[in-house]
Image: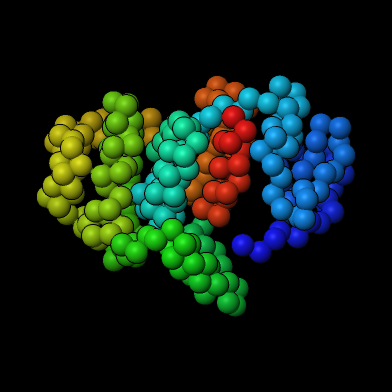
Amino acid sequence: MPRRRAIAPLIAPNQLRWSVWLDGLVVLPSGAPVLPSGGRRASQEQRRQSGAHKGRMHVANRVELIFDFVSPNAYLIWWPLRDIVRRTGAQLDVTPVFLGGMHKLTGNAPPMIRDAEVKGKNEYAMLEMQRFIARHNLTKYKMHPQFPFNSITLQRMALAAEQDGRVIQFVEGMLPAIWEEGLDITDPAALGAAVAAAGFDAKDLFERSQSDAVKQGLMASTQNAVDRGAFGIPTMYVGPKDGENEMFFGKERLAQIEELLEVA
């Protein structure tokens, strides 16, 4: 693997967040930059020291994934993130939100719409997606024929499953049906069969998804994620459930997340 080139910080050392890496540069509590030998990643001990400031030596070994089935990146990040969680022994929490509502609240838009007028950008994004798929051997992935589909019912069902403590099981069961098999989201019978195959009572979950409590709960979950800085999928937070967290956006941040979890 090629070495990472060490570069000078673009901002003053005392402005750098303690767990942030700048292309191989580590900032220790003294504020002095330390370049890992040969420009390689810093050792785990150096990462521990860089997280020691202000009591952050022991970062909670927990990842929260802000999640909506409609995003292809929700599928693409799921399996590599699950592997990282297993390797590090971290806890994984999934927070269902409604991406359409998040876009409305933040003014964001899907990249293929947002970047449509930028020559070459969407084409390059597709190239990077193919590289990610190849790197992580996600060969079963297929673009959904109804994309972008309305995910509101799925997300409400996911929230109902989350209330039962079974959201990971729901996500893991439904992602292949949607992003590998092209499940017809608009067909109630097909959707119900997929939910049942995932190990759930489809009738019960659907009925609960139509309750005011679940509808309001999804709205509140989406608003809360936006209030915390989220603007798209996948957004991840590393840290304790009721404490300071590090926010990461995009499937390209997996290496940074794994490094931070190794400090915990």
